Image (cartoon, rainbow, N blue to C red; front, side, top):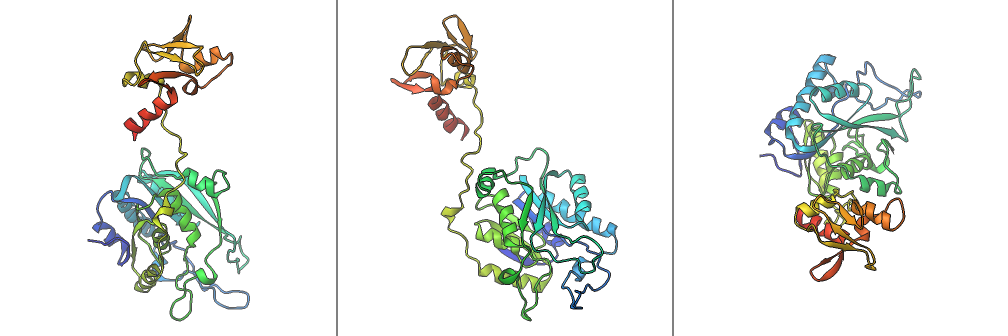
Length: 357
């Protein structure tokens, strides 16, 4: 049994097989990039750049990298709930290969997001453009998934403008950059918490369960704990795993009361006027009237209403008597309900609360 809210030591290809089907709301993947660095990279002053040279980023061939990618993504597909989501990050070295495999496995790509690094490392050899971004792919388990997307939460945090697919965050530096016991950079590809927070706030709700198979120093799990989500992480390097779990112990979760997202304005499911008739909330032959009671109409069995010699929807007849091209009939018409006058919109709200929630 793999415990939640902990980063476990081991190879993710082995540990993923120990998890139950359809158990995760979100999976975040920061796999090896297969950077193919052939020699040491130095700055103009001849100091060595602390790039990625570890064995975990080395593969014999593109074929072996693709087979590795297919294996963990296939496992992740099994572990996601039917309406779950998956995020994966990479660079030009690997992200295009990953995208193809995602589609081969019938994941449904929702967006590619460009993380623009406001403080990228320069290209010291001056042989090509400075790599100032990485690419994230956001996808659902299948084309039919009803994935979580906290649209209003992101919009509110973006000055009431729709969030776009280009995100600007600096790479880890200063106090955020984790050091090992020798005061050296602990992990060469540590991701900023601001980026992790954005993903979690967009794609999950409080108390959801998330998975990070390539935990590194635990940035995604740290964000999950801070934002009140449950998490499981895997890391095959023991030094990284120890650093990550130590880091997690120092993080305090936000007050649970602060974690309700601003999704109350999400568009509600439309309820046709005829639905209220078919469900018995309204009866054919009943009278509708406006607030001044100087216009009266009759409810018909087919979901229309009649007024004098006119017949049409509640909106069309409301527009007719108000001598305008359009009018909201839900706010115009009233009906006698339990011996009191009730606006139709209240009848509709009562139906929505009792039948749909």
